[in-house]
Amino acid sequence: MDCPVVLITGGSRGIGAATAWAAARAGYAVALSFQHDFTAAHLVAQTIEAAGGRAMALQSDVAQEDSVLALFAAVDAAWGRLDALVNNAGVVDVACRVDAMSVARLRRMFDTNVLGSFLCAREAVRRMSTRHGGLGGSIVNVSSAAARLGSPGQYVDYAASKGAIDTFTLGLSKEVAAEGIRVNAVRPGIIDTDIHASGGEPDRAERLGAQVPLQRPGSADEVAQAIVWLLGPQSSYCTGALLDVSGGR
Image (cartoon, rainbow, N blue to C red):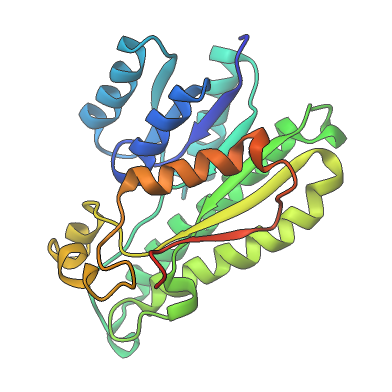
């Protein structure tokens, strides 16, 4: 493989898919993971390949260690290197107060959003760190403006999981900085993707966009451009950064 390789989790839709296309345009070979939507994920990969890039779609549940190990092993087998990771896979749920949240909801939220990011970063560090014989690399975690807003009355559990991602980003960035790995995060605000529909509010981006200082929701591509910038050499002196892509919110 003569070009850098990036693994993007949750790459079948929304910010993940937009990041896959943006990374391919920036010269990366793109491995994207998906949990359920085989058709959408493979369409993203096929679109990249049709445009002259290199891409593959791999099924994985980031909340399951065996599945994460298999995901990284598949990238190893196909391309033999890993230069970057985007921890994008995540879930949200319907609006709910904390006093009505079930244990099942909380486990799903934290297993996917937090545990999954830890497992994927662990495997990436094992491959990229100079301590382990790697050549360095870059990790970008997808957090959320909810981490600093709290999302009261909607999904405090989601906000708390993204707060954990912020802390994880800061700690890991310091842990591996001397080993050639930069770790940063983006914190999207109101972005027009179908994640709002999975949270029971398909019109949320349109409804709340006017309340943002820039008076509109953001696009998945606007977040993707920030992610690819953080991945690449243009941001070579950035690590431990939490970059808000939230329209001023």
